[in-house]
Length: 85
Image (cartoon, rainbow, N blue to C red):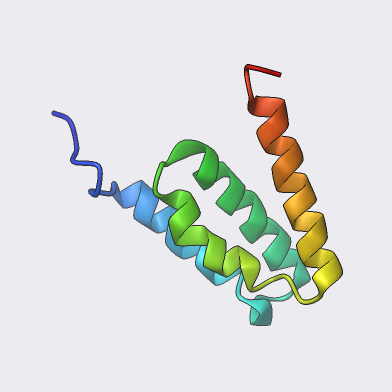
């Protein structure tokens, strides 16, 4: 049976919750790194993940330099995944 696009599996919701907890700045740098890894895996797996996880990931960016670095990495990832390039 196919799921409706807005329905999440328990694993998906659990993953989002874990990424949110781990990327909380109060969790510390090691937890944040793990949270980023979990979030990236989720973004690669579930269609709704970017909308759910980008706010938590953005909260980890504290300076304009960090934001620029994140934008550059995202752009490179998009280019390397583009079959037309």
